[in-house]
Length: 332
Image (cartoon, rainbow, N blue to C red; front, top):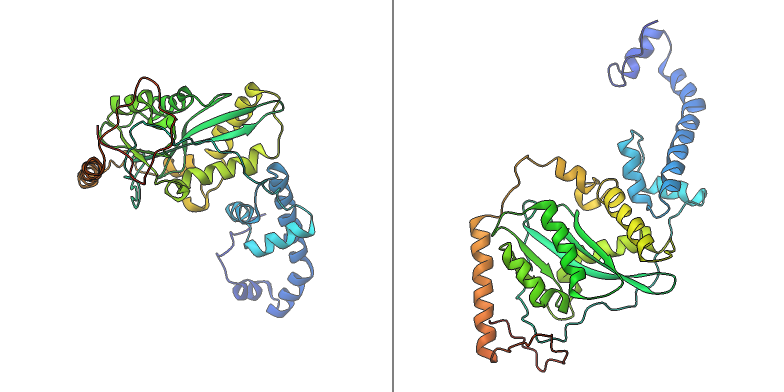
């Protein structure tokens, strides 16, 4: 018995002629059996994917089904998920605030605004969010590569001290080892990112700091998007006994699900690990022109800030006071 030829080797008309049947007869037989078989196979695969990840939406499931060889679009997947009661869980409202920008430390200018990275390790994004435990709150700091959306560093503790952000950055530095002078680090204006300990670690690796505008989350939108995904797909659907359990489960989600399995629409429905594996072996460094532009912006904005108000000299501890006026000192 010969093996069947792959689909596309012969046309329907040619196969009907060889078999001695009419095309109308073939299509009548196909309509009576094949659609039901195909519908059953799609539903089976859809239920398997939806139950494996109860937070996965219909667009991402549709992309995964197409990767498995099914000819489906997102509208059909949405209809089947509604019929089978498989729609994903919804997010809860976000309330707590983790950023305290009322300090006297130096605030870096925004170098990431409008920047379009062309490779990994050119622009890192950092942010902190809260995690609700049974009896207290924990806080998660992450460092994200803006080009591949991969989480390259993270740390979880029950405090908001600078050591939390430093631990996440240290993990990223060990994992990626960026070339000196090729990387911009962008964050909000929180005291964890502006303090001497964090800034010294950036300077030791020749990394340019960058900070968002006041009260503007859009400057760090990719990091905010990751936090939303984390809350929707991991945190809101679970309950953590303590920080140790949260660290294990959230760490597993970041490393195994988000970085390696979750399909990202911005990466043509590939995971960050798969996207990075598809890049050329050599990392694309930031061009000399981009680096010079960033340095020029840094110097120009620092001089402009110095001309507006005299520099502040922070003491050994951050000064927790409200800054008056719209101008924040960026000169040394």
